[in-house]
Image 1 (cartoon, chains in turn green, purple):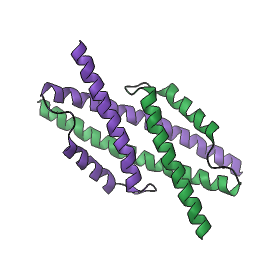
Image 2 (image 1 turned 90 degrees about the horizontal axis):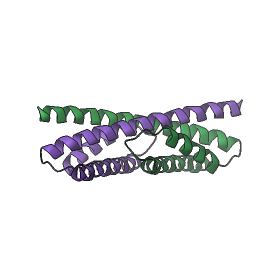
Image 3 (image 1 turned 90 degrees about the vertical axis):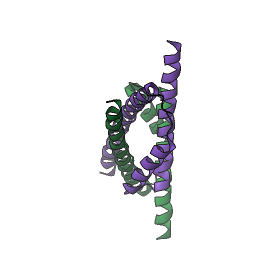
Image 4 (image 1 turned 60 degrees about the horizontal axis):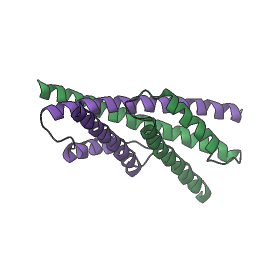
Length: 96
Length: 96
């Protein structure tokens, strides 16, 4: 009985992993598009004020079980990965 | 025109952030439930083989734009946060 429950929870977990993967990559595409527009307009890619606004939104919407600090730590890593993606894109554009 | 496009992409980004937040917390709930079942069965919470299987699944389903290594790095942080949540739960159970 409990093993069946465990299997069920594990398959739900695997599904959530793949949904997270899709969203992380969707976010990556959006961040690339934003980077390209900013590049054309000569704007700086990194905008600490916008990032602060996003962190505040995330904390305000966080209902747990994760603490705000944990969630913010995870999003910092996600944001950093997005910024690196924009930088790769910029380097490739320079090489064309 | 481009500013309107930028605003649109930014609001999509904010929406994706909140969807990610929901999924991260949903994953947290599942991991807590799994931890409680394992606890009752006297099983070890950390299972490196299961973790390896999940990493392989994630890499196999990764269509980018993020590299596998970036995605795996992000999931390592997410998994670690989940494990910490189970440990907190375990400590609280001991205090009851």
